[in-house]
Length: 157
Image (cartoon, rainbow, N blue to C red; front, side, top):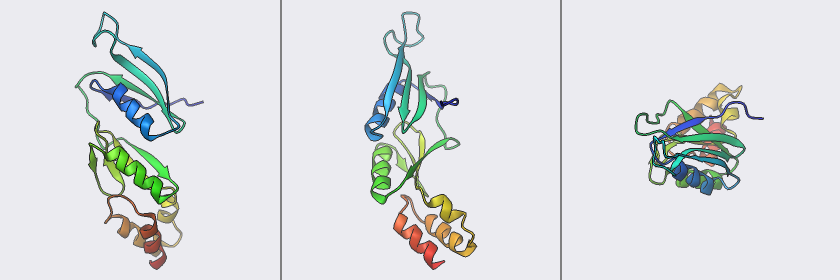
């Protein structure tokens, strides 16, 4: 049972964000939506919190107003087995947002994600430092990560 849940503060679009994420991560689901009542502070009937799940990870989104913004200090890592999986998450999550270096992106809500191949940790922590450094140099030139290029750089390191 999950005992720590990321709590995401949105301005007024937590439900929209959860629905977008569920359209991208096909195994996701919404567990509960709590709505504001007449006492507010949000408009009556609008989403106050939304409890949703992506790839087995629960999240809680709050429509708390414009007081706080997401920063790169917190990001979510999506580990991918294949290049088509990386490509799909990269394109869908960055739509309306921005693409950064080394597999990082921001979605249209400003939330940061890292789309990485599952093999990355093993390559980076290799007992062959020259190979790991060669792979890291290649990764530093990339926006979306390319598994074949990372493996090639590692092999030639």
